[in-house]
Image (tube, rainbow, N blue to C red; front, top):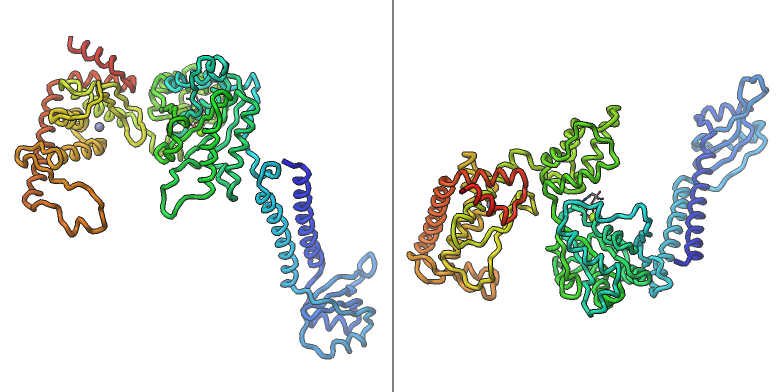
Length: 609
Ligand code: ADP
Ligand code: MG
Ligand code: ZN
């Protein structure tokens, strides 16, 4: 930024502010020391010769009068003001009195005073506008003081540097980022063999899971400069500013390569350009385009890595995700119990913990908490302990802090009670056990009761190989697995919850498709009841109808019902018979929160033996 220009602008600002104050002050001063007296009293004083000076305006009379009594310091004079009445003889009266001076004054009513003040305000805005507009219009680089990136450079202060040691509970993400660190440490080593290093890494995950922290740790581990900017900072008032900021950010980073550029909240600029009614946001679009241009423009050999973070990957423009851009995606998920314990450990380092503190217990008490929540928890507890004049933080403060963080604004949707956790565990165990009991289903890769997105828990099944054809048995099996959750809830708690909503939706949709699309139903035969969705115009369906009779529609409904009910009964029998296995899996899940596929196999083998 051109410092002379900035100084000039500031000078103008200060001058305007100073003048404004001056005017205000003067207006105040003149009114403050005047006593207001009624017109009658003014006339009376005039006749008795007390008035010594008068200044007249059409709307106001001001002047000096001598006070009636003599004070200890002799005669005192006082300023007065009064509002005039129609009095044609006033001048005569004044002539007749002992008044020494009387004079007129320019009409300065409060309206004009305000107008004068307003004039200054307007002038001030005009000046400001001229400066800003000029700068933006000048474009180019040297005049772009507004476009100058606000990116913060974090010089590597050896002591305070963030490293992987400061991040816990996200081991998979760390592992994936190791490669980036290795590259940044020694770019030449990687280029020697002609390998291509990813230019862009996208960190995906819910808020507070440590994405920003991880990006910083990558720079810290590799000991390279860290340039960070937030997506929302690019979206400025003026078109073109965001784009030039991006340009500038990359330029700075390239100069000090190897370096890490970090763009937080990428979704603020990277929203799909075609989403939304009424076209895009010009400024955002330009910024996004500039990011794409920069990404395409630099080669891995420059040693600059762009890391971006978002918690809304669903809204990102597909152009950002194309090969050669943000082609490396790193999931940063909420921590499991062990991870939570490690995070608590990190954050309680600077805090004096009481003897009764058991971080493992705390970790068990905080399912669904992310890193930021846990950091907040420790901090709240420390503050509470200080307020209670304690020497250390005890479990009581921790417990209270958990409640506080749970109730906090950021966590409304994430707080999970002990009871809920149990229900979720049995629900997921139900899915898992059914998948294990039916031969030929996709192997269970992982079961988790850590909330992810809208799901409270999930059972992840991965097929052994890609398939393009699905058999009727496959679909029937899938229906069984889907029902497993609800059935387990019913068996164990005698009560069902809303947790199965998504399962039921999916199951119903599957059953309906079996009948209407796949021709997998004996009663309805191999007929496609669903019409190809061609060009759909408004109202076409209404005009053409469903393409099948009311009776067929009823038959379809009845068959869907029958399939679902039969599946439910079958699964219930299955889980009733294997109640002990269900308990085993659920107990382990409650304890560990995540159970991997091979461990699951071991548990089941052990339980059966
Ligand atoms: P995000 O960028 O994913 O929203 P942040 O990185 O800004 O989350 O995390 C906010 C704070 O929470 C961090 O500064 C750190 O103190 C704490 N934190 C979050 N995740 C972790 C973690 N995995 N390990 C340690 N601390 C964490
Ligand atoms: Mg962040
Ligand atoms: Zn489910």
